[in-house]
Image (cartoon, rainbow over all chains, first blue to last red; front, side, top):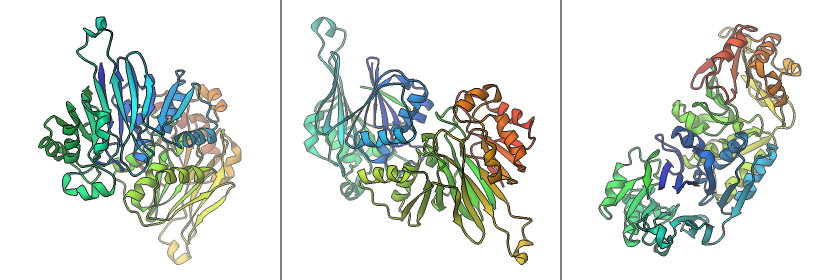
Amino acid sequence: MFSVTILGNNSAVPAYERFPTSQLVSLNGNKFLIDCGEGTQMQLMRFKIRYSRISHVFISHLHGDHYFGLIGLINSFGLLNRQQDLHIYGPAPLKEIIEMQLQVASTRLPFLLQIHTINSPGILVETAEFKISCFPTDHRIECYGFLFQEKELPRKLAAQRPKPRSYAYCADTRYDERILPFVEGADLLYHESTYLHDQFEKAELRFHATAKQAATFAKKANVNRLLLGHFSSQYEHIQAFEEEAREVFSASENALQGVTYLV
Amino acid sequence: MFSVTILGNNSAVPAYERFPTSQLVSLNGNKFLIDCGEGTQMQLMRFKIRYSRISHVFISHLHGDHYFGLIGLINSFGLLNRQQDLHIYGPAPLKEIIEMQLQVASTRLPFLLQIHTINSPGILVETAEFKISCFPTDHRIECYGFLFQEKELPRKLAAQRPKPRSYAYCADTRYDERILPFVEGADLLYHESTYLHDQFEKAELRFHATAKQAATFAKKANVNRLLLGHFSSQYEHIQAFEEEAREVFSASENALQGVTYLV
């Protein structure tokens, strides 16, 4: 199985029961977390996800709504006596921030925590079955998207599976066609859409995108399906995002908390 | 009005919908926050508390379940364009941790944030009407309790009010009679009770208290009422805490989330 479960779909300030960004990617029995806004561990519990099996966490950038829940998750793993290694990937100085907070609490984790600093596009994790890479997006501070790709299988095994699938997470970004080559042809694309298009100037100014822009990007990237998220707290209702996007790219839908989307 | 609203009553790992520690103290129109575990801002929203009016936050110690929600709250205040000064009190290096996280996100707050380092017992805030002081507790790392006291009013005004009231928050602590003089005669005492007394050895080892110990402390401190909290995640049901405490001190009750207790 290759799927994405939405844990939080809001931007900045949590609102209307929408939590800040976090997604769980399940890939052939492996579990990965993308971003980890405040309350992510509560969302994992709420949706009854066995989160002890998360092996890697990918943090796109150091705006709080994408990583303030990470230290709490790490701390809980420690208290729950996790043994398995945990790998974190994110821009500097994530490592320093996390380590300082563990140190002041005199926390000794019972597992190996490895925090890897991302500073350029490339492959982060690779196995015989899949690879995970990162690419730069166009945001106010250093920010990365992540691409999860199944690999081609040897012919004998390949018969069991139609073709390698891929999931692209475009993090926070302005509309930027320089990102297209990284996500070209993905089966499922998540592209932020913080605003509706009547606010595209605000979006541009704040290094965010609109639903229409996300759909335009999805169309140009030749992806199969688009997920919209990172909704601004100014919107109580989010139905209009999906509607706006579908006018440009019909296979668009809102990323809803607690829902699992197959890749 | 002088009251305490419980936002989180659990210890360490959140569990069974119980959030980590946070309390809102309302005192004659002023709002203060005591501790700020992960998800505190969500709890403030859930309970429909107008949290923009919080002027001071008191952090007892730097274990994550008491402050991991602080950076998110500060960040949200900024995004919501708060103008009023915000004062934070807590042990070092809280200031460094918060400022580093604001800096890496290039956050410029629209309000004045003052982080005051606590390193000894004494008065933190004093007005004509009340004073707030801190006192050391007996925990694994540097930790403080907080005492909120109304002052004696001039005789003419005093007629409107029976007598000055006080609320004592004993933070995380082992049973320790050295704390008694700081909280003597409080109208309302919050004392942690992480475990039931059949686990008093574990409590002692981890610098925590049991419900029976909290009640014994309350009795010796001659307080009017006792609130129990900071329950361990090992307990799905917490009714037994109240029952155990009442055998020693009848005016004991569990601190329940979303409930406001008059001082």
